[in-house]
Image (cartoon, rainbow over all chains, first blue to last red; front, side, top):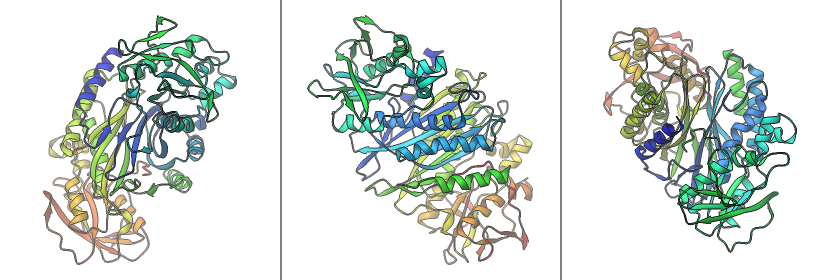
Length: 301
Length: 301
């Protein structure tokens, strides 16, 4: 099925007309350039579905609202953009009452206010399971968006924070790791600084696990990657750090001469390797090939 | 429940910050003005859910794809805009196979091509029932978008086409009316001409039934409306024309001196009444009050 879905996505990608779009399907965001504008606009869309992405009994309504928006904001951060507004579509289930809906919006609006994201509208309906779809619009200086396809051979590879915390939290259901799973913090300030101060050549967010996401960045840039052991979240295992999704940290590359500080915008930065010429998409960890085992939720933007 | 939902929407409306938005929640589309741009951008989002908006056994995959996009395009038409691109999120059910998904995109892309709408991206996942959320972005000359709140006392009220066809089709499941229910034609050319040639003062699309939609236009413009019997689709009843939703015709008002042709962009135009001073939102049909009984799917954009 996974292979079929991938083929299908490829078909859609070929079919889609590109009029007016600087970048369509295939990166964290689509890029649209309004006529005469100084800024490019970034658009990303993310589904959050009961029993697929969250559970009714472990995720509070406010957690779900927060996370729905955080996922979209993380895509804006990955391109070095600033959020502008979001549109929120919510299909309710029979078990959701007014209190749940109010909690959902409370969580969502808290993050919206923190990040300067306006709620521009949405749709509210009824379905089988709670299904939330969020579109976030961000802005970035014209032509300056960080993309997956800009890395060059010799560029240094960096990640922010420590990886595997969300997977650990999901496995244990408690402590700081669980909180991290429930309330990811999109790296908006870091994404903007990576673009303006570090002159990052490529970037994406770590939503599906390092092994799969770095593979994708390598594919887009038509390069390979050689990495060392990445920074592992305290208590998590290497497998969780490599293949566990939903850390929402940033993965980015910088030209070899750029000096990268150990910390930026309050987040640790760690060099994990180097981009190399070689088979597009191949990732080697301490010299051994890594399979892209991260979570593939068939996302095609 | 309906009242509660309405209250809830009001609460969201008050809460939502408005930064960067010309118009937020409460019309067919949100309006965003990119810095320095000659055009305003319009955004609308619409859910289409199995068993709520369509049935697996009566609506083909291509019908669902077409309709999902048509609903969004109709909102762009209502503001006099031209479509630019769409984002499509699709949660699949267990019963959907590759063929269904291919059919969905075939239907959607046919209308996308006809209307010049690029497919900019989306998300694909799995849920309980098929749930599709579409965001359409359109563009309109700066400050020129048709809104619900621009009607003035004395303006003539017009509708395009004949009403009740979709409700008739849904009731009978056959013939041209059924086709009309399955494959609505968004009135994009008409919307643009209503804005540029007819100098329409207000407009919206008829998605939830004339009685409810005209009530909303009157509320937004803080006026009442006096109407005669509207044009009824052949074979449909007056109740279907007044309260049946999903006709996706346009409802608009024009200043009293504007000459409106009988047909524009291939669609009949009929004057159905006049905007009057009076209680905001009140609608009178042949002198009698009309209750807003149309389908309220809790939409808050």
